Length: 302
Image (cartoon, rainbow, N blue to C red; front, side):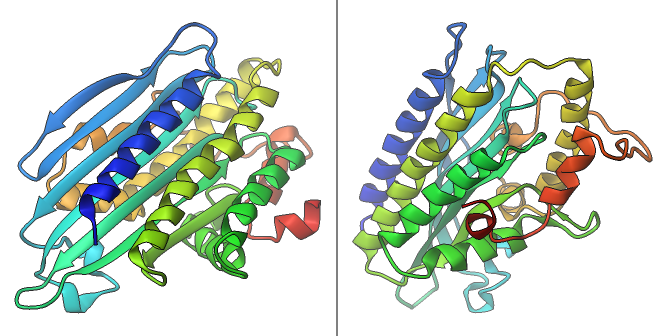
């Protein structure tokens, strides 16, 4: 187990992702970094605000240690309750300005639990998912093809396993819908040796930009008006609901006493809620609902 190697990979990914997203901007907007230190550790939050393409984008790196694992990290591992821990990761959420460009999310992370008197227990997690407001089949197909290409380099059947996990995790049970059209989600990754697991994390971060940038480039100049903007703001509310109510990363950060501003940078800069809203039947807005359910996108669209 080489924690310094993990930190090097994560820092490199943060640089790579920020550079890739800046390359899609058109008004000179760049990520501004803020180094921070808390009682648990250190990190750097990079935020791009008021770009021509991205209304707000945040790419956060953190490296923290604590004396007791938070409940959100031991829900599936009760034997680690009370153990000291060390965690590091890169997490990002991108909120585009144009309603035809999907919101996207990705993260890669490393955990190490240190039960008293026992050997350390380590694992990785992460993934990426796509949340369109006005979905395009070719975008969704490209997104999932890129995810499968990544997984196939490591193991047959891995894409199907991690896609299913993503569909189940990014789900709003009170709404009866998925957060978007899915992607990959994985946790407790230690099925290979440490170096291979770390390489999978690295390639996950690189696959995210390979999956997302072509979609941004295709859609960022799509004409739109106030109707589309208001629907985008309304659907962003679903993102807020998931991140605050269900997301384990948000819960871990808040429960462990992390830096609140960095934890909540995933929230959109503008959002609206409307009681009893229902899109007009047959409209482009109503069409979205057909996409918010698990399905085999590669079979359907390929």
